[in-house]
Amino acid sequence: MNITLPAALAVYLKAEASTDTDILASCFAADAVVRDEGRKIEGLEAIKAWKKTSKAKYQYSVEPLGASQDAATVTMPARLTGNFPGSPVEVTYTFVLAGDKIASLEIR
Image (cartoon, rainbow, N blue to C red; front, side):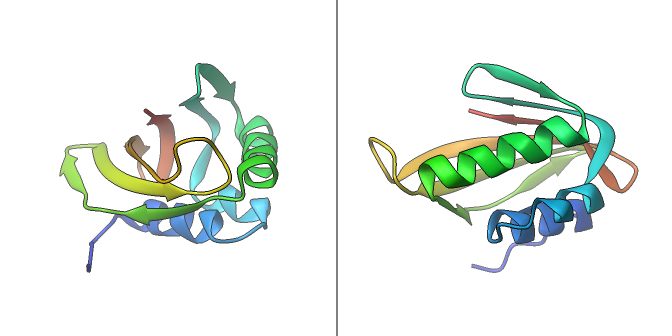
């Protein structure tokens, strides 16, 4: 499926397919916030650490299933497949953009 995404989200998905967390600096604002698994992760360095830990723990991949945008908010349903109970699962990524960067991300 061909899905058109804002540039920051395309970079985020590239980072998801890699173990290089430095890529995240290209798509997240320095003061970005991520909400995942009941946690609130604040700031680029904390987001890099969260991503590194999550990738090591779950060895997962992300398959976008679609995307819709309403102003600065992009909603992207996705299938996560990895080393965790119930895999694969479908989740919703809700991104809020600020200019060309991700200001916030919620995964539920």
